[in-house]
Length: 275
Ligand SMILES: Nc1ncnc2c1ncn2[C@@H]1O[C@H](COP(=O)(O)OP(=O)(O)OP(=O)(O)O)[C@@H](O)[C@H]1O
Ligand SMILES: [Mg+2]
Image 1 (cartoon, rainbow, N blue to C red):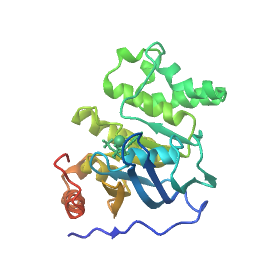
Image 2: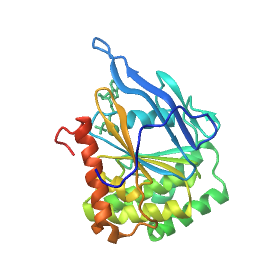
Image 3: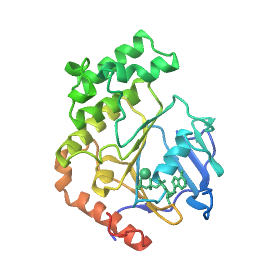
Image 4: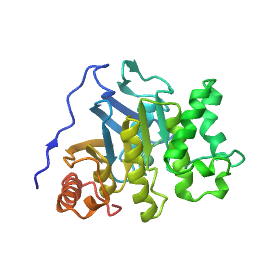
């Protein structure tokens, strides 16, 4: 194994000291007529403000489950999650989620889609509108504000979803395989755009992906997950300089990290041929 720092998932943190504190969070799904599913074993992880952490692992290892516990979209079975000082019990505007499919309303324009959450929450001000317009400009969608989703490419739709998630100035951005439906070229362009957005508008990010190279390129740390039961097996520090640039993709240190993380999966017996 090469020169990366591997750390075991950290000990239970103190709520409030971190941007996100995951303290023994666990999820068991009760399935009618079947055995309970341990989707996530008690899990500890804390994130510093502005940190970018990826969760990588094969299907069914609890990545989406963990995001749902952090976003309050699902009830926790035991343990707790804190975002800043707030113990998560329900969804909150301080945490935004971007899903694999952008889920835009087809009868709304790009701008209307982006402003919809603020409108529904009753928080749509002139400032929120201006921030959304600025973000659309920043990500190259300024000229498409009044277009409809069907008139956009997949990459442009996902950019719209990202701006929608950021328009309310959340503290935390959760991304669940946001680029997996895109072609490789668009995906790489979006990696750089996401990192540019993140450096201009710092947020604590948890990014879920099946793609190890994507996780390494984007992240400060990568949490390697394994299934049955879902768990964080290992956390790998990505000690690569920022800003990350496309040249990094051919850098031996990059390959070394990707191959180290792949080895973590083999050690955990977590690769079932789908990664
Ligand atoms: N609502 C639910 N009811 C019952 N079991 C569930 C439910 N949601 C998830 N599970 C189970 O929990 C486990 C973890 O699922 P989860 O969706 O978190 O995995 P994942 O890592 O996101 O997988 P994928 O990469 O396929 O998206 C799986 O075994 C799944 O079948
Ligand atoms: Mg999932």
